[in-house]
Image (spheres, rainbow, N blue to C red):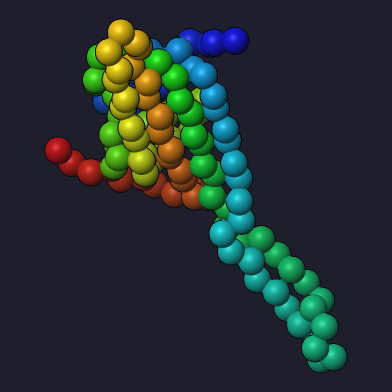
Length: 112
């Protein structure tokens, strides 16, 4: 099943993509622990979390986010860390991207 997605960049402009796959992953990037006098761990706490989104699909044209751009997926902004646009003769162009953000940190993309 294919769904049409709309991804927007910092300037508010979007691009259409017929999604094939999407994966959202959340991981802890830091923990803190407290040990008691006996050396055993008394408490383990999450310190920070990173969220990654990866998707691929079919697009028209080459005006798509590139590494270093900031894009919006759903309600959240992500920094693009890798992007690939593949074109083959007689086929639709395939676009794949991986983007991430940590703890709602302010994102700053590359200036062109």
